[in-house]
Image (cartoon, rainbow, N blue to C red; front, side):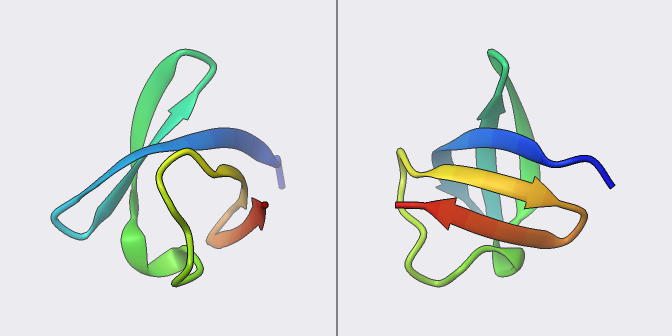
Length: 53
């Protein structure tokens, strides 16, 4: 499965808006760790998210 690198742009109504290569994509907020913040670099693989703090 492909690993996607992105940056948290903002949170909206249960979604995390992630910027990936200049475009944004919405992901369900509940797949992100609770301490994820705007500006964090994240790696998304399927429904698993890791944060690069």
